[in-house]
Length: 316
Ligand SMILES: NC(=O)c1ccc[n+]([C@@H]2O[C@H](COP(=O)([O-])OP(=O)(O)OC[C@H]3O[C@@H](n4cnc5c(N)ncnc54)[C@H](OP(=O)(O)O)[C@@H]3O)[C@@H](O)[C@H]2O)c1
Image (cartoon, rainbow, N blue to C red; front, side, top):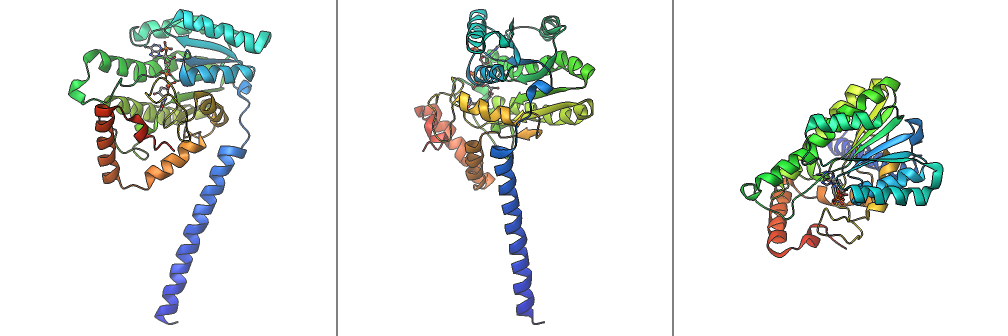
């Protein structure tokens, strides 16, 4: 065979293999995102616990779960908000569901107290699902040395300690019945394969990296105990968490996000449930790491100086 023929055969084989791989990945993505049937969450147990359920994603999730017939344990820091949401759930779902709430301020309460409170309140409940959603961010982008001690403390306690201690309190209940699902709401900023760096939001993204590693590792530890652990990594969702509260193509509302979120529970250990976030990620993935690093720093400084968070969202 001539050299030219060999070269053509080799290149077309490589081309065919990579095209097939891309096509298979695309079909798989379509299947898991739009077509795969969601798990019946009641199979895990009749109660779901959601932290940070008085606003944003957590609040949207509890309504979705209650509409699917799950009883809910709300966890939040504001008793009047918790009471209001309990009432709203009961108005919407009637006597089909039960709602309880636990008042915990994760920025203030000690780990031992958090654990004891939860163990006491869930005693005797058939808890099947735990969603560690609570989280806090920066009020504005800032250099590490400018972040005050109180904010650092709060970021660590609310974003990392909370999920550690709540999981520790709930896990034994699931282990006993050999069934359960735990969903930790991380962030794309905690996964370097999606966002290589997040300057001026350093502590936030570092706490979310903890959420990712924590989730992935315990998902392996408890799989054989019948417990599915998952870390969801959204990009932007239109909540009070980010200054951009208006939803748009790449920034779904919390209600839209929560519907996608629920479809993924019990499957992959790490996932990006909303399809538009996934497309956003693919666009981000076209950039080299060095370029993305520069861009993130440039935009964070622009947001800090001019308050232009919209630019970061590639808002179409
Ligand atoms: N929104 C986004 O673009 C985005 C992107 C990636 C990841 N996430 C993650 O998604 C999760 C939910 O965020 P979100 O956007 O829904 O935020 P959000 O709208 O600000 O809601 C946060 C929830 O956590 C509660 N909370 C805050 N500090 C607390 C504390 N010290 N003790 C107890 N509860 C506390 C809030 O209570 P109050 O109602 O009393 O304020 C609220 O219920 C977070 O883990 C966040 O990191 C969000």
